[in-house]
Image 1: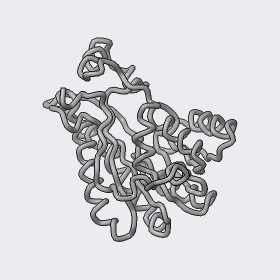
Image 2: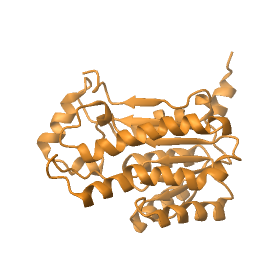
Image 3: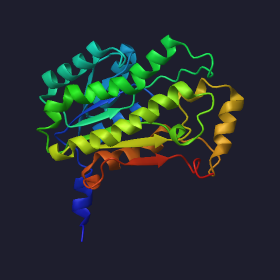
Image 4: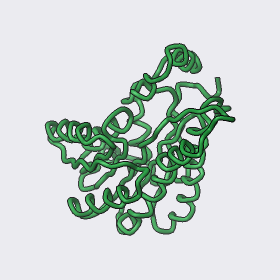
Length: 257
């Protein structure tokens, strides 16, 4: 029987080092703050240096430990720098949250090479090469866990969002491949598929589109970014020690509806 102390200890991330990309706003920010609250040293990365600094200041004001490493996940030099800066400051890497994304949208028939390359670079290529760059450090961690944030859109028609959903579907497949190939090294890799979440990315949509997404779930509302924290913490924590290659759908009942 699992004791209360054991359950609490499972969410204790003291001594672990976490990288959160896209960690300065929305889902990434919520996860980063939660990881810090659980005791992890958190490295926050996004393209906006000031936003990264603000998130770090919030964590430190609450008594946590954090580092801002601004960068673009579409730039592999920035990806390598993120790993190097993390190891230089904290000595290792235990957790990676691949959350950075761009939501470029072009209809089939009008998709440009430039848009395709940009979407793939940030949404799929960056996460893969971040994990590869961090691999020597994950291999020596006793709690290595990778969380790839995909999208519930990979389980839908993807109409109008081919650029985004194609890249996220690729990231889901990479999740399974990574989990298979890295299991022997005691590295778990899982995916989180959020539904419609009230973020800046969501706010950029036309009001009619937001309303349609709200009504698409049986709960009839958007999620708050904080509602992605529970699923993320479960997959990253020792409570999910026998979970790898899985995708946790947190969509308010959108896909079956």
